Length: 309
Ligand code: NAP
Ligand code: 8YV
Image 1: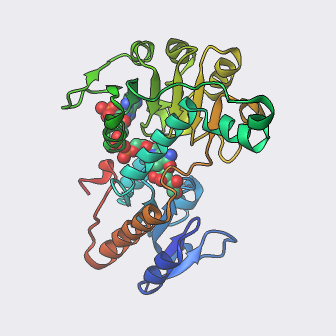
Image 2 (image 1 turned 180 degrees about the horizontal axis):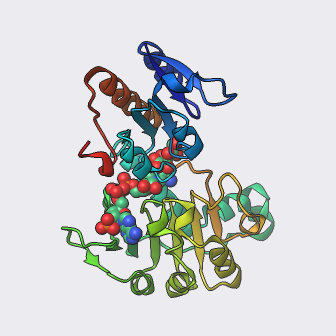
Image 3 (image 1 turned 90 degrees about the vertical axis):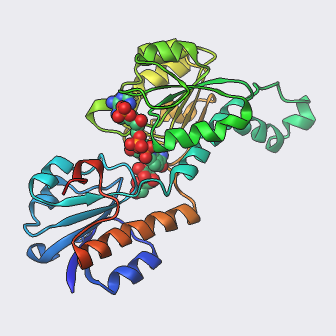
């Protein structure tokens, strides 16, 4: 049997399928036979630490449970002939639901109004203040890829006007903005759904948030690194930015206290794809890639950089 290094957790179903084909070693606690390891199963949070990759001389394949692979040095892997796979598409609808749910929770003050009932305010003070309608808003999508398109589709029934920014225009009917700040000026809500990594690091900066403005809503379901978190907290505190719905943070699982204290935010613990159904589909694809590589030497869903390997 081939030797697999497991980084992070796997579900029971994944473990059962993997155990039939691999001898599984866990990174935790060390003591794994580095020379024997040919395959790694990891996730988008843990990735593969550089020292671990360097210590595995016979590594051939890395399978990532998650579509974002910014925690894996793909260039270093590719240079050594190691193919990297991820789990695109199977989570599009779920992450899109999370983005729309965060947007609606911000607009309709879901948390404030839930607290209004629980605290007895309804009885003591009367009706809660009015909120804002989600209908007929203009939404700017930062990164109109697989998930970005699913978000646009889910917003269509609300009469939303969709516009977008990415590095290159796509073959879609929505208006394209080559400049992110210009788009932020024109929209009610900005939804971030690009990959993480150096090319998107803090591209949602103070200028972008000021352009979004006091009536604007920022939704981030991409990576915490995409938004300048300190600038966002300051903008939310000053009222220069209206609301934020966030599933991802700069230093997860740490969320700055200043952000946790704010009332104009909705905060989730990186659960964009976190349903039983979608995690099962991601787990199945993670294992399918490993088994296919073991059996045929090919993979099903390589990351784009490894598509020609
Ligand atoms: P995708 O299909 O590759 O789409 C990514 C989009 O981002 C593309 O439209 C791309 O267009 C754009 N983009 C890339 N770099 C950019 C840059 N520097 N500036 C502006 N736009 C840029 O990826 P996906 O499957 O939709 O996933 C997107 C990301 O969502 C993942 O990488 C991951 O980080 C995040 N995610 C989060 C969760 C969660 O739980 N919160 C779950 C799943 C995924 P161009 O190449 O033309 O720029
Ligand atoms: C997961 C994600 O939480 O797919 C991604 O890029 O961020 C999420 O679906 C994560 O990768 C699972 O490890």
